[in-house]
Image (cartoon, rainbow, N blue to C red):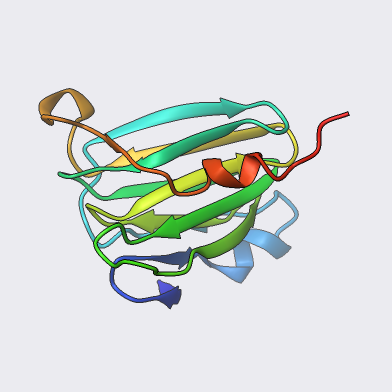
Length: 145
């Protein structure tokens, strides 16, 4: 496993693969190895222009893998005043992680299918999410026809 840009709070996981699985003519096998055990996973669907997020998770790390489509993941540490947003363009095969208490939001550009993997089951958290403004204020700048 190799890690892309990260600061320990969020980052990108790069897929590992055996070249033989690609050139043998059957397709390919790509593997992501999270640093923490995954205890729950969820299949998410987004319509173009849809957003999910503007929250953080107090008790678990979330791994987010795009299976189809493209969008933008936005991060912000709510404990740091004035911190700039960090943005990742994501498309099929991109995987990122978000540590507890790091606010994030995902905005779909095209139809998106993604898998969210959590290090603690959602319904064992109190609360599972805390809503914060990561990017909703940006929607006000978009002129709708």
